[in-house]
Each structure stands twice: as structure tokens, then as C-alpha cells.
Image (tube, rainbow, N blue to C red; front, side, top):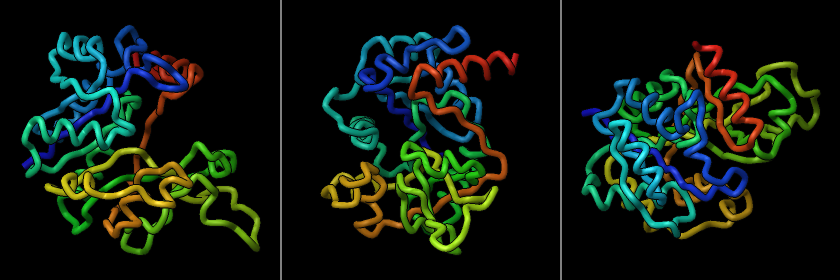
Amino acid sequence: MKPIAIIPARFASTRLPGKPLIPIGGEPMIVRVWKNVIQSDLFSRVIVATDFQEIKDVVESSGGEAIMTSESHENGTDRILEVVEKCGIHDQAIVNVQGDEPFLSHDILRDVVELLKNSNFQIATAAEPIHEEDVYLNSNSVKVVMDQSQRAMYFSRSPIPCYRDAKIPAKNIGWKHIGIYGFKPMVFDQLSKLNSTHLEEVEKLEQLRWLEHGFSIGVATPLQSFSISIDTPEDVVKAELHWRSLQ
């Protein structure tokens, strides 16, 4: 059975308020995200989870499914949990697709779904190689280190691994985390009962809560990966230019 994709779309972004409704190529960003996920043909159902009526309206007017959720959620996982409870889909595999990545490659989606289906990992995510030192050093770029079975060992905003006694190489410096998560059936029910943890609070990374509580996270490393995460006005310009290049 195909998993269900849920796309959290919060209106009140700190750095870019109203982000889901910003037009990319003449269409609201959240509509482009929804269309891209639908076109992958990897999911039995694609749901936008939002806290803002206008976001729900534009998705539905485009033929999509959207569900209103509380404005008080602190993260996308809590928003998705509300949808899981409302829809009674606890027994389904769920993939959390970020609502600010309208051009996320289908290879990334596919590899996360395959890892979720064909491994014992409770959670699946993805990463891509880091080739630029400024990305490696940037605290807004989340890095991940894995063991030899592609199980995540740690996520950090700090540059990991640390090249203590060697110069940073020119390429293949490390792995940049791609913010997509797949969850096996019933895993959400377990995550909802977890308390926050020290590492999570220090790094401001929710996935560290899952690691600290012993959940296994597998990391897909697709050969072809592409995404533009839109967090700033400059990112909007990049996305618009990319859309034009595809025409």
C-alpha cells in the first residue's frame, strides 16, 4: 500500500510571513508543493495541514485536500499528528513533506518511500553530499552523520564530522540533511508521547528527540537530489528563476 503524504503549511513564518501563499511562477507556493507531490505518483493520498483558511481555500480550489489544524502547534510533527487523529490513519505509513520546497526532486521522495518500505528503520529521511565549505560551516544547514547501515547517528547545526587534524577537503565534506521524514504505521502515536530532550533544545532539532529516545532513523542518499527551501526573500528569487528555467 502506498503511504500518505502530509504537507504542513503554517502561515506565520518568522522570517517570511505568509510564506505558503507567496507566488512562484504565478501560483501559490503551497499549490506548487502539492502538485509536485501528486505528480510523483508515490502516495495514496496527499493532504495539506494548515492553520490558515486562505491556504486551505487555495489548495482546495486547485483540486487538493486540505485540513485545518490548530494555530498553537510548535512544529510540523504536531500538526501532522492532529491530521492523523482527525482522519483516523494511525495504521498508515506517513511521509512529512515540507511545505516550502516546491521543486523537491521525485528521486528524494522515491528513495525515502523505498527506505521506509524495505528496511526496519522506524523513520526514514534523506541527505545529500556537501561540496561547499560555506554550506558545511553554516549553522542554518543541518548536517547528519550515519553508520555503515545508513542509520543516523547524529544531526547537528555544527560542522560534523569535525576535521580536527586535517584540512577540510575540496568536495564530499559531509552530508546535508534534507527535511523530509517518512514514518512507519503507529510511529506517530509513539512520538506524540515523548518528552523534549536536552539535545533537541540545544540544537533546536526535533529529530534529536527521536534519536535520544532510541528511535531508528534511516537516511536515504539519492543519486539525483534537488530542492530549494524557501526561507528568505532571496530564496523566493532563486525559486522564481528556477521555475523560469524550466519553461
